[in-house]
Length: 264
Image 1: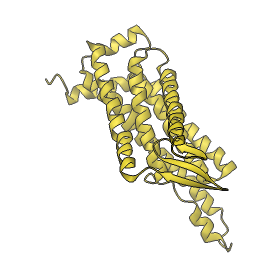
Image 2 (image 1 turned 120 degrees about the vertical axis):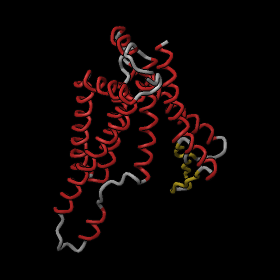
Image 3 (image 1 turned 90 degrees about the vertical axis):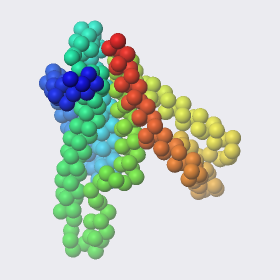
Image 4 (image 1 turned 60 degrees about the horizontal axis):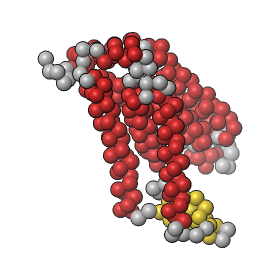
């Protein structure tokens, strides 16, 4: 039998991981879906569907996904559960793949499917509530559409999700206690530091800076208007590649190596 990967052994580990903690895994998924629905409904009633779509998607997908990733390998909060997990007759690659499958692939598939159904329901309800005889009917109808997973906002959210989920997965292997909070604090600290460092560097080259988006754009005050200075296309492409592929790939590889270290 292959010591690195065996499909039957992997299936056994996956089944055990899901059935061993059904309350945690299914509970997290259910809470995330309910919160998404409530967030969508509340924001829609207060600010409209467009903002509700983004708010519900960001909150549910990112927060729920980060909790799921932190829990997928969260066996090390106690010595007994950690030792039991490490002694499973499976390779570290199979255990790692199992965590990735649960926290990223399965979670994303279920969440995106649920969000699409919720979004379709609210969008159709809005369309049906319009007066077809109104002179502005066509404009109002076209102004609200189902949230596309291939638009710019969704793509940025996906990138954040892949980075955060990998960071949480890695953090659960380094921090045995309250790993979610510790990783969240580290991520927030990094984001704040990056923002102000970017603002400081931008201040060396420009005056009257209104806001500086890290690795993206600088907003300058020009009289009563706001001007935007973007990164050069080549630099922007390199940074996008690093954030989209290199950083999350490195986090995943580090998690695999860390899991192997724990088994030694």
